Amino acid sequence: MVAGTDNYCAFIIGAFNFLYPILGSSTFYLYFILNSRKMNNYVIILAGGIGSRFWPLSRESEPKQFLNICSKKPMLEETVRRIGSLVKKDNIYIATNKIYHKKIKNYLKKLNIHPRNILFEPEARNTLAPLGVLSKNIYNKDKEAVVLVFPCDHYIKDKNRFLSILDKAICVAKRGYIVTLGITPTRPETAYGYIKVKSKLKIINSKAYVVDRFIEKPTFIKAKKLIKDKKFYWNAGIFIFRADTMLQELKKFAPDDYEVINKIKDAESLNRLWPRITSTSIDYAVMEKTNKMVLVPTDFGWIDLGSWQAIEEIIRKDKNGNIFKGNFIDIGSRDTLVWSDNRLVATLGLNNTVIVNTKDALLVCSKDRVQDVKKIVWKLKQKNL
Image (cartoon, rainbow, N blue to C red; front, side, top):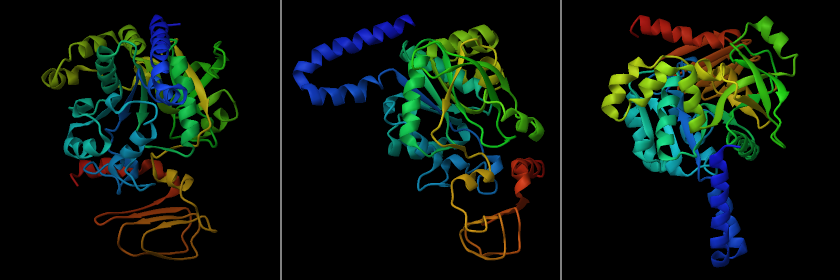
């Protein structure tokens, strides 16, 4: 066990002995549960992407994290509220691109998050840079910190189960492991990376497995083989670790980046040194190389809102397998998704099709090609459209 964990336990026991006679059993129990579990927990929410596979609804100027796609609240707000019982508001950090400075500030008062907890990335450089910088900042604040990392574009069906599994993962992370949550595959998915596990971690009731290796997004044929092996899980991109553990592994596997990150002290040095941090994922830089990586299998109804295909897992279909949202008329279509902001969309005899209609753009594509919508965004950028 990490030495700091013993100090934390000693603190909790001392607090109990001091406060129990003052507050009484029931009041203190509630106080104890709601506050002791949050004390050293910190959250980093990754909210800097443009959501190119959700075009034309998601744009660089108004990306999906600021949109109400599958609930009455924007994705970013849903993510913050979902983890509220695990962490104090002062311990929630958000990493986003500097171009969203005004939009994020509009959320700060509503969500009660301090502006100093927002990392405005000078430019997009994948996940190593923001997680490295924020892990260092959090460690400087709290040497016993446990960090939970969440992308802001996830949909969670069973929130209570989600929080329960995170509690277990936090306990494992306090032992010095880097924990990821693994999703049991339900189909041969080519849009996700996969993780293979080996032996069960020898910690009582941890329900965690030692990670064998990471697999990049596979072809459809390879994905069909992977899901037949129960040792493979989808990589959800959710990580839990002690801040000091992550910094140790960064120093070990990405020493040049570690040195640059250590020199970042303020906004000026952030802007100056940020381009010197390797533009790569934390998965590639650390997770795929460390021997401290473990996986906790999950069953809380996880959906990655990465493309229009994900909508089918959330919104109920009609008897012909269609989903219609907005102003529409349909005759005889099957397995079709229509999403219209305003104008009437009339469909006749379509099959396996996605139509997304906004005020200034229209997408029509086969469901088999929804992952390629981002290619349209690239082409639009090339044409300065």
